[in-house]
Length: 620
Image (cartoon, rainbow, N blue to C red; front, side, top):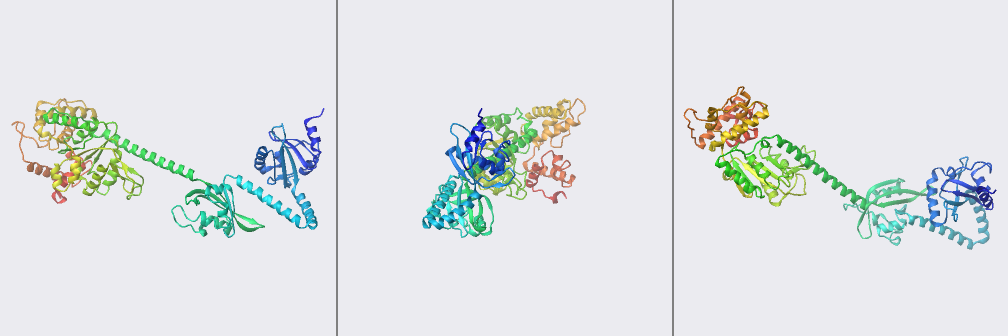
């Protein structure tokens, strides 16, 4: 019985060259003739046939590419696949391959030992040329022209742009992909200085001298350079972003020039740019959300989050009516009133009842930071804009985008910053410090001040144009001494809150205690009342609330309240602050500072020191 192997061997034996029938799907030599066995060093016909890949070694990848070309063309040849004999001896062969009809995956391979072939060729050509003369020289010229044509086919089949330069920088060849990417033809480029045509300027417009070009260094100093981001210039003057490898080439071990292989990465770089911008935007949104979250967490624990507007007086009812009127609009609101009258509560109530209640209410106390830092806090900053700015940071206006910003003590904002604030509000844009790109702004503005607005303008503490912009809808918070009927409900409400927070049983407010509360002058208004109630909750160990009041009220026995002028009230307040500073030796903030003793915030006390013109000489 004739097997597949015997049949293929008998057929292959008729082929004069070394030949192999190869099953590429299994890397199996189906049959080989004596010439192939001799070429690859097989000892005997009966020896087990090795895998064909064992002859290829590191050239397996090149052979796979060659097989793909054979599959496409039907037949092909190559000299670019180095092979080894079974004993490891390197072989330089010309491989010719042809597909086998009706046998998928089968290739017929024939091999020519080029070393032996070249020796025979040299001898034959020498003899033939001596005999044939000029006609054979023409045949030789045609042969080399065909070789060049084959090389050109390979170059044009490449997807990357490829061009060569000689040692003088003149173009020697350009493949089709390079012509398509650059818009130049071979007639435009061959024999000309290609650097001056496609590589003459950087992307920013700066001249690119050829002496600094990595391609120039390749063919001058025998260096391989891999460049990941430069530009080549098209014939129409447009740049394309490229990455390229420049490699020196040699002729008989003499440096002859360089070959450049490049790829158009314009689309990739544009995609990377868009990705970076998207990531920057995500990072900015993340920072903004982190800032908003931190701010909201602080707001939850602040006093504004614990109280509603409580009262039964006509002043409170009128206040609530005005809040209802303006809340559903986007009109700017200016709230004025003494310290502690609840301006922050009014701002919170307006925001909660507005269409912007789903977005945050950002509270910025204008006198809480120094003049050198107030701009960064209000408008934001980019990294490096000011000393210590290690990262981009949105300002309070930017954080309030889509919501409401509450500018407390607006008259304490430096005049030069007031001008920039007015511009931001009028143009509905904000630009961070150190940046040139404005961001759109959609905010509702509520502002507050302790001083009367007209007085703030006359004293130069408030720009009139900014006041006109902010004072669309004015609201005044009435002092507690002018609405004494609210003291009982406020005291009861604040006592409930204090007992829950301090985990203390609720004491009873007697008529005498309530009379004391109602007859007291309350220079600190509701904030002072809250402090008094909390202090009384702490010291009251029995069922009755024990008060520790100052001297702002009248004698409870007479039931009459002393009436004082505004100048007398300011003088009393000034004397009280000076006495407190003497006791704390001039210390304002901290647990034992004057602000803590007075039951007010340090920023409020600083504001009063400026307003009452109190200096160190007064308490020293």
